[in-house]
Length: 530
Image (cartoon, rainbow, N blue to C red; front, side, top):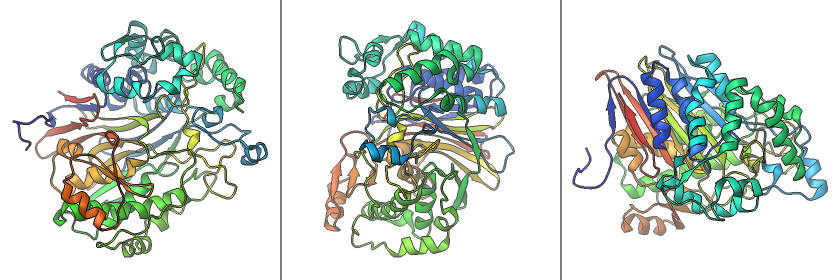
């Protein structure tokens, strides 16, 4: 239990249903849907749509979505890959012949957004409300306005340059060339009109007709290869989740093209360590070494499995675990085992929103939505008001590499929802935002609860570290002794320039008959239940 004499948060306990998101208006929208009789999927779609309006530099309808859904009584969750594909004309040879590279604001970094199609698929298969009904709160905020929250304002101020160079983006997201201040009321009438069209026509209102024409025209004006056929062919994919067992629990992740497999690989390495008995110094060191092993293979092998074979069975095998475990020296940091740096990607924790919902019937949703970097590509379609992501930046232009850019291909994705189960019952939808950090974030969150005995909020509050890019990025909160000890073992310490990621989790305690929900203090959001 936390020290109530110090600043902090408590977990939210609820008897019927609970929601945890990274924005208060998103949480409120979900709770209202639940109290009106909607289920977890209904509430999640309403919440994420709101956040696509009120947290525009983190997410939007011009981005992608992944989800894990565990209906009450299901022994395994349902996984949905709602990420978009590259244009049919996007051959790596085309880029090489012209000397074109992928840059954050390039139209070539824009894949067809998959979020709207994913929302519609989730509702069609598992919802009880229409997309049109659930988009109404988002439409209202876009039309009538919303107050900018403190963390949103901070991130907005750091991303001005991204939207300043695009006339439509600057008009929508800047005030006299500057980011809005905390509490400023912002409105997005063009986006509201597009949301209304989607509410009336469903995903066709986005992927066909005036909205798609507006997006494609803007991208082609900038040199993009996109066509209306690329948009019309957009479709999410129901996939089989990947899983491993850790401390008696079954951890589920979406398979590649996401990075969730790396979570399971790291947990498999940690299985043979007494994490609960380690000092903080040893724990951070062990996590760093396991992280290097998993991310090396991620960068080398993870890609769109429709077009490339990803050796999932081998990477979850005892042989791989033993090899990775054997490469760890608890007394000394090993040389960074990075396949090669992903192009154009600095060590930063990209822009994403994640939410958890558990409804009164025990259905659980773990959903994540993203435009990748702050304000994505910075490109806004001028008539529809759709801000486009830059997820294609995760491609390589490297013939022979599984993640090289190619026609109608999904890039390796960082955004990953998680689901924890035990004995065939759902225990917790969970997720951690933060670009490349997310896989490590899942490991830190789960081990905090399952190994260290922290409650859901304490596990989210704990200081974070991330070994990627040749050093360990560390938040404030670690003692000087730990930092010095890591340096003595050969680690290069990188003080975090800001909070690392953010997360949400809802724990289902069937014995007590309650839900315990936590929401990351690094964001503006909160957990609520009833």
